[in-house]
Amino acid sequence: TYMAYEFINRRPANLPAAEGILGLAKEKFPASGMVYARYGELYEKLGQPEAASEAYRAALKLDPSDGAVAEKLAALKGR
Image (cartoon, rainbow, N blue to C red; front, side, top):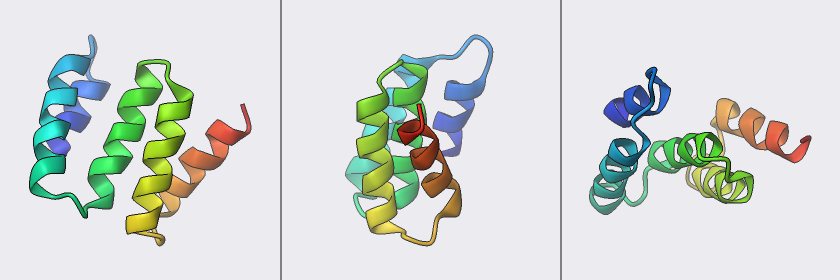
């Protein structure tokens, strides 16, 4: 997921590459909250707040202790 993070946050972003990497990560690590958290970041960059919220909720379901994801979800709800 670190590579996906780099693709999402570099300038210019390479969102198709990030999505491809996340797809592979989700297949290999379906119970990883980090994968879903990265999907949330990707969807935010793509301007899809509903999909981002759904991904963040999935991440929190897998890892309820992830405060950063909880903050991102709360920020989306506040928009």
